[in-house]
Length: 121
Ligand SMILES: [Zn+2]
Image (tube, rainbow, N blue to C red; front, side, top):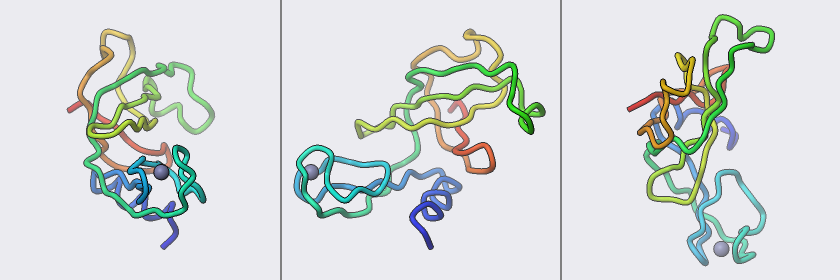
């Protein structure tokens, strides 16, 4: 299974697959040859719970072709608990900023053509 496929399968379980530097502990979202923080080459997989808080987002009311059926929705950035990581994903049913105050608790709920799916907790 490719790394991408592993990430997808984990997202469907509500988890976030990360890559931890075995030297300094810095977490990476994607595979890297060198640690972004210390330059070390050793990594191990770490599975995080896909939960966190909404850091920012963009509400989409005019969707790209093929996505009209999903509007309104938001591309959200979620700060992942117990890490310095931020992931971006798709949250349906967001029409106005009142629907999603920054800091709202959220979780990964799946993965499909839209990417990582995130919902309010
Ligand atoms: Zn490192």
